[in-house]
Amino acid sequence: MDVDKPHLGRDIGQGTGGYEIVLSGVLFSLAGLWLDRRLGTIPLLTIGLTVVGFVGAVLNVYYRYKRDIERLDAEDAARRNGGS
Image (cartoon, rainbow, N blue to C red; front, side):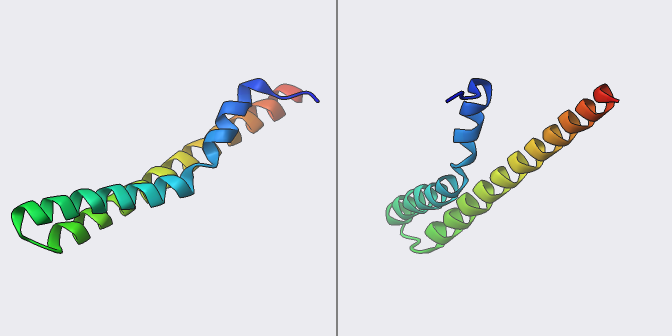
């Protein structure tokens, strides 16, 4: 079985988007909960930081996906122009 090694790391990295979204939300919410307990503002920072973590992770996954699609389109166009 021939494995395309240059793409192996990239392909493994593409499967982490869901984990990144969930873990970012959880970590930011835990940080918010800790801050809320220290400042006595429960649940203000918990909710705010959870939203920030979730939205940030979603945007990161979206822009990474968009960048990868643009790169693949450019590679495909170069392959088609080179093969003509």
